[in-house]
Image (cartoon, rainbow, N blue to C red):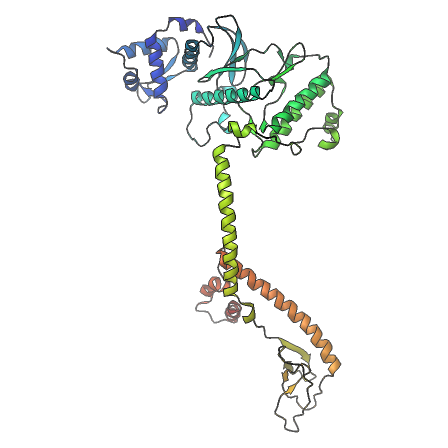
Length: 483
C-alpha cells in the first residue's frame, strides 16, 4: 500500500486513540469487535463509531462483518501510528520521497528539524512476493498463530538490534537511530547498490573487502544469509556499506555452513560475471571442483570465533541464552546419569551373569574305530592313563593323558597313542576356548541389554510361543533359553 502522509496532518487525537484501541484489541483478536474497540477507546456519546467511519474512509482500518461487526488495522494505519510516535519523540519532522522498495520493506527519506536527512524503513511482511516468511524465518519461535503486523514488528526489532551492535563493533553499516513498531530509522547511506555499478577502479580491493566482511561477521558469531549485490552499498570512493539484517543467524545454527557458503558463492558469481574476476569460479562452472584452501576461498570450518560473540549477546537465530542454559544443564545431567548407569550396569551384570558359574561341558573329539565317544573334564590333574580290555573284566574307567575318565573300550578297540592325544587335545582346547569366548560375549551382551531395559531376555520373549507345544523345535528353544 502506498504511503500517503497527507491525511496524517488532518487526524485528531480521537482518531489516534481509536487506532491505538484497534491495535490493542488485535493482540487477542484477528478481527476486533466494534464493542471492544469502543470500550478500549473510551470515547463519550458513541464517538468511537463516528471515528471508525472516518478511519475506514482513509483506509487506515479494514471492516469485516463476515461473522461479527469488527475491524482490523491496515499497514497504512500501522504506519501512521509509528510515524506519529517517532514525530512526538522528535526523531524527524517530515517525510519525503520513496527511495527503495523490496520484497519485505519500503524505504523513505525523512528529515529532522535541522534538515538532516535520514532513512526510514517500513517492514511489510506478508506481500505476495514473500509470503513464505513463516517457513524461511524463525520470528514466531514457538508460536503457531501469527499476524503480519506482529511479524513486521519482530523483523524491525531484530534489524535494529543487529544494526546497533554491528555499528558499535566497527562494521560498515548504517547508524541506527531509533525504532518503533515496524519502523526503523537509520542514517542515509550516500552511495549506490552494487548491482547498479558497472565499473570499478579497483575491483580486486572491493572484492577482498567484501569477502573480509563475511569472514569477520562469522568470527563474531553471525552470518548475514543474504549477502549479495542488492544488499551492498558502495560510494564514489568505493567504500562498502552493508544493509538488510533481519535474517541474520548464528554460526551455531544447524544450516550455518550452508548459509556461509551461499554468501561466498553469491559474491564470487557476481564479480566473475560483472568484472571477470576469480578463475576458480570458471573452473567450477566447467565442472572442476577446487578445494577451499587451495583456491583461497574462505572456508566456514577455518573461521575462528573471537571473544564476546555477538550471537550470544543478541540471541541470534540458532542460538539463544535460554537454549544455552538448557543445553549446558542437559549435558551435565546426561553425564551424571551415564556415569551412574554404567556403575549400576556393572554391578547388575556381575550379579546376574557370574562368569564362574558358566560351565560348558566339552566333548572329546576322539573318534574310535567302532564309533565310541570319550568324554573328559578339562579341570582334572595331568596323569598317565592305563588301558584295560573288556575281556579282563575291568570295570574301572580309564583316565586319559589329562586324567579324564573314559569309558571302557569294546573288544577289538585300540587306544590312541599319547602323541595323537596331545595334538588332538591342543586343537580341541583352542576350539573350546573360542567357542567359550563367543558364548560368554553373547551372554554378556544379553545381560547388558536386559540391564538397560532395551530388550527382554530370550526366555521372556520365547516362552509364550512354546506354551502348549511339544515339538522338537520348542524343546530346543527352551534349552537355549535356559542356557
